[in-house]
Length: 334
View 1 (cartoon, rainbow, N blue to C red):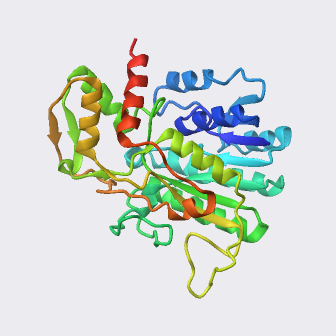
View 2: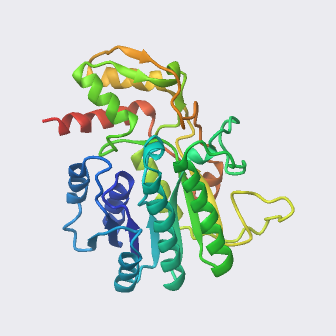
């Protein structure tokens, strides 16, 4: 298939693109290579597949409608995966405009292009952060998500609402995937696994927020990519059991779906740090600090809908995943 992927120099985007190329798809990638974190890591990810004969790369911003429209006109994608977004909860407290541009303006450009070019299926990244102030665990797609606690979360909830509008008005099949704490080789340096690895390897103390009472549904990158591909291949359909008098937030009478994609196995943050220390061969001091603004204490994905519809089954234990991540991390330090 001809698949357009945005954010191909990003963590999930690069891993997904490699898999799609390996199975014989043609991929057109768009990435703006911004400096939210070290662009050299993005270049290194891209170098793994940039010269592949079935890959085309454009350095551009999805917030620029001309870039998006040219991509759709030149490549005529059958399916689209939108992973380009301004990521990170804490940065949204400092630079809200970046989120409006990428996550709202950019996503609108993608939706419009999909509509006008007859795309078969749009899969896009949402986030576990949409659950916001919810405390019922595990988080289920049937739960209402109306209390975001960061602008990043609000922008992702907005993406789901915008996608539903296009599914309803124009029959565009859309599927949103709420990612839960993705980690693994080539991961983002602003996320806790990389921050912990850096500090442990240098013997520096680690700041542990919420006094170490956090738990996260850490999900290994290969499991995420497997779920994205299964979802991409399973075009969203209207839900025949949808009842407008008792609406299910995860489905619709339009071709629209929202799924959690996680490991369904929450891990205490202190246990995650212990595994990192064990694999890196040293222990460091933990500074227990209060919760940060915009953060949530626990995440846990109910992935039953994704299991049911596409046979998704995350297969990487936290022990195995951390070991693979640390092995990659060490190889990058030399």
